[in-house]
Image (cartoon, rainbow, N blue to C red; front, side):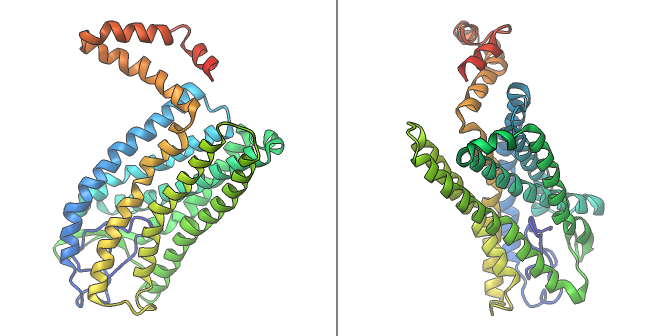
Length: 362
């Protein structure tokens, strides 16, 4: 199957159905990693399904709140909306990869190329918008005066457009190199590079992913949040400790979810250079990639929590959304709670005054 980020080869047999593994034409006969294939068939589909469910709910809620209530009035709103769209793109391809891990690729060559590219596009665009959100917070806190002019909706739309173009550019190998073909008993979806350039492409794309997906974001986060923390500690604000704590959570979560996967694929694609090219190590790396990749996917479920729901304003909008659209409808099917729900809903949010009450609370 397609390697989910750079979706490159590590040594496996022709029947491998893993999202993160592909057929290595030069060494398949030496290492038959059927154990890893069966492990993936049982391990990946249920976990991908959970990521799809929770990621879809969280990010759709972010989009609804931003469009319906916040109405995209700031640069931060623009970036949050684009981050949610990036996560939804990332999630969109997971049901196909879940089926592929359990069975074979039945969706054709065109969809193999499209989904491989869309997966990469969702990954890279998500990383880039996290970087933009980091810079946005840096400007808002450390350079507050300059931010009044720079942090506008117009600039937000402009930088978002450029970001999507860049993300699409770095995702093009997913569209170009992946294809579906029958290998022995089943169809696969994997990357196929020119034979004389295969190792060079693998290593180049892996380095690109580590640089753009881990090193650059971490450096920007460390530099930006260090200055933000210094500025917050100088302020006489009762909420500064909560803000500092949230900053540490963002950095720790990002490193925890992405570093293991990036390091694992780096070891995989530089096995020969590191003298790690044995069947036993291949098998261990195969399982490690399956586990760490699934962990990295969870980040798209966490993004709505740490970037949107953690904000006080966003939580108030979310509360109003549930009161108006969920609680009142649920009460129709539960008469026991109808009176209590209706009374609380009418006292805090009515059809005519709900919007004003939310604005006043903010």
